[in-house]
View 1: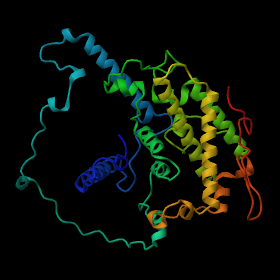
View 2: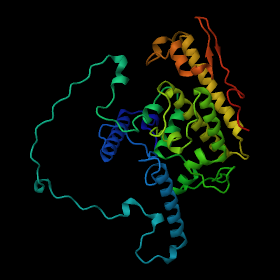
View 3: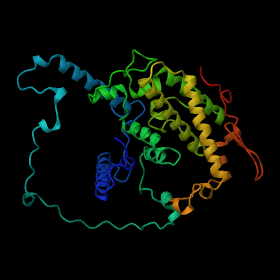
View 4: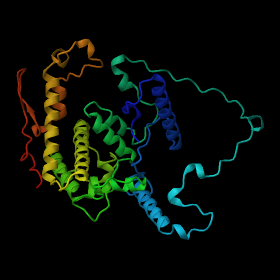
Length: 368
């Protein structure tokens, strides 16, 4: 399941309207189901509590395992089923009996009309503050921020789709592939090269695999060096589902936390995809070096936005560039990247240059 706005399928307005309407209706039904009619859709890997086994990512992976076990048992005992008993491996929704038809509308009891609810005063705001003012009224659930994080502009299209599918529990790891009965082409490996005896689930690929554990250990040590505090807990709820009920970064460091966390997730997923198509396992140092390179490129890209007007130096007419001006101020760049001058630093003055001390040895050496 991906964000329909990222599909880019179909150019006719009717197709775009159908996709948008279907998405909005599904979101409304999902909100009513969880008792938050004005809140965003709850992500599939979000658990009710940090130790709950009946919801969230742990429940999804348990369902995958039970479905795969049931499918294997039905295939082994296919000839021993009783006559007329359905086969779970080939069951489809259309094979179920149709639901009972509701009574005619004229025979249904009609509720008494109630007094109309008082109309709320609509908040007036300028066009530049639409995003800040477009917040649903009433108390928000703790998962309301996860969708705003992936909607930020620093993620490219591939990274947005990866994180979107992860929040929905639809990334194509081996456990999910076996759950939906999709056959893999010849040459694919079902488990991680470093863990040939372990099933490739979302938790294993991103958290418990030795490669992922080494990368997250380096990530936590780097974050501790940036903040000067204790390293964050390395739990699946915090790192994958962005559940900040047990631990959360400081408010001024929240953008940096999300940027580094999502970049690490995308690099781990890219490493898993390369391992499925290529022979030979990558070391944690290679993956961490790619992560460091992508973050340094992000720093240089933001510094260009803070020092150069890209609307006038892009080589095209400025009227072609739609949307808001992406230019950053130096204060915004400093607040985003230069905390304690560990990752990068900017000198004083208008002609100050950028220095990036973040390297393979500073502040934390890359893993082996």
